[in-house]
Image 1 (cartoon, rainbow, N blue to C red):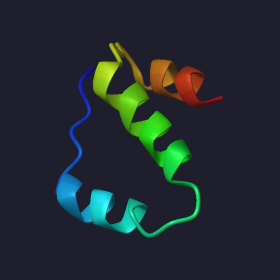
Image 2: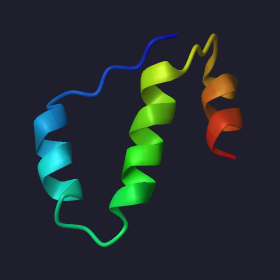
Image 3: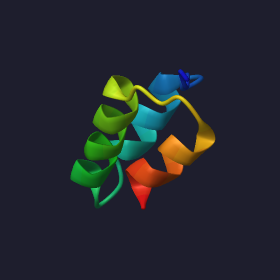
Length: 47
């Protein structure tokens, strides 16, 4: 199950101004390399 981030640049622009940029980068890395097969897999990744 592939998840696409629409308008990634907008999110990156926002992340550049937030205090917890490293957390955002960790999240984008997980999303980029995820191999989900069901919505439950997504929940398990972030639980």
